[in-house]
Image 1 (cartoon, helix red, strand yellow):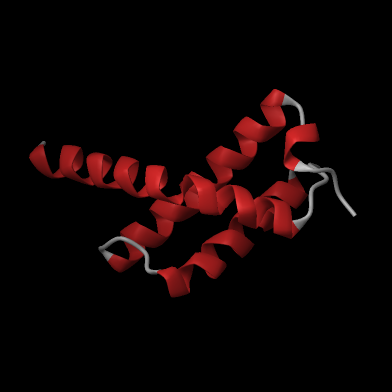
Image 2 (image 1 turned 135 degrees about the vertical axis):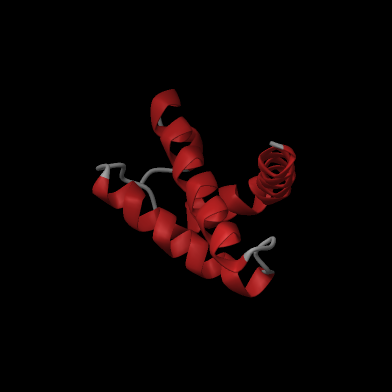
Length: 88
């Protein structure tokens, strides 16, 4: 069993957020739109694989909870990035 999210070091939490956002954007770009709730699990598992490869010990459930709290921010940030790219 891994640590709770609040027990992680600041840089570990930041890396998890980066992994989740990168996977969210990658899925959105592949689809050409905002990922749906059904694709959320795929994003989560891909990001969790990166978390494990980085040697961060945390449970999938903890990452799932964190992703649930940040998903709306990821969506807004993704839309801003897409709009910025289209305007160039």
